[in-house]
Image 1 (cartoon, rainbow, N blue to C red):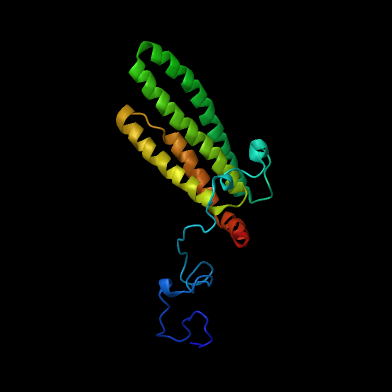
Image 2: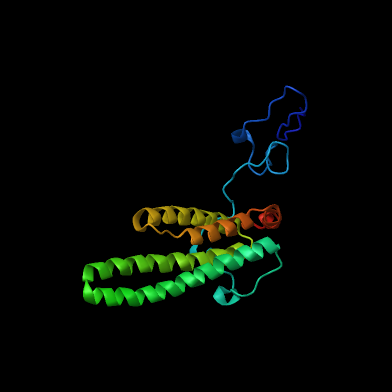
Length: 196
């Protein structure tokens, strides 16, 4: 091993890689992505620190403008956006249903109203996260991946209660999530890592 102050790398058989916690900040780990040893999960370093950083640059007027990015990401982006817009539409229709139900049974109407408001917030967040994802923010990709996991839980939960379930919604979310993590998509996100 060299003694130049760099992160020690195993040069000889029998040398052991350094403890990941002992690697100085700002240096790459010897077993990180692109090196033999494989992929190491890390939380994105580009997470937002203020609320304005969560909002899309230029507002929501750019929803139909898609920059040059891999086809996989374009498909994933449109799946997330269309799903979010359909969720917003269903939420608006649900608001009318909550008002009608409130006339018949106020407690049930209030419960439905709360559920519809949560659904509207989640659909709006999905559209916002998709727009941040197309800007190259890795934290948005992680959040959308978590959203797909939540849709799995909801599908299983609704199947247990109602016997039906929202499996088509989960399958679509899963496909969009897989597309975000394919090698071409990963390379595209890696190109943005130096900006923060």
